Image (cartoon, rainbow, N blue to C red; front, top):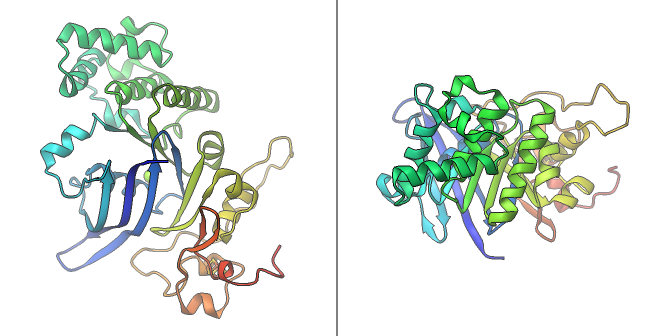
Length: 329
Ligand code: SF4
Ligand code: MG
């Protein structure tokens, strides 16, 4: 399978002064194949969103800066191109949807105007043609009355409706890569399922690739073929979906999976992973998960494990992965 995106050794730091910084994303590497939906999972603060902003070149409004690595999109390093070139790619070949549609929709502009502007920025369509295209796309994302929605301002739309509008806008230029950062987290379960179905349908029709960023393993199980798990700015596990759920190797992944409710199990209170995500400015010197890990030993506290290969396309950043796993359930 050919890769559309290859992220190599990406490191992003946030600077509080010229010399003082915290590393929010620490040398992560992964790739997304053409037509693949890759999941990026982890608790909030693990570096998921910073990863997506780094890929999209959207760190400029923050104190964050990519200080190492490459982001190869169809072989071209996005970290080396001009802001002008990047603007053309963003919203064209690559687009993004966020958890909060309101943060990407302009509250002072009618939907038709926003969509027409977006479409015309990346195509040669006339105003009338762009409006026609906008209506078509709104219909494709299951909006029953596109003409009415086009005339609305964002605040006149429900949460589910504005998320559909945002997906429509992201799709309007037929991107090759869609980065979806918690696209359904703010929605109720019914709407969430509809939006995920919709994204999958469009993905299949257009053959685009999706980076699905979420803290919700249910979303990953539903949508993805492969996933990476991040913890404290690093990748701790990467695996095909079946293996991730049936044979997770990293204790953190096991904890995440154990805290997903099983349908019909009647279980109301789920075990969650004790402790919290470490402060990035004072990380443990060995394994970053050691303070929360029930398998932690001296070895774990003394030295940081690398990402060991544990199976075909399956990696785990844990010393257990490099040893006899006897005694562990
Ligand atoms: Fe736990 Fe040690 Fe593995 Fe870290 S390396 S996840 S502390 S067993
Ligand atoms: Mg986030």
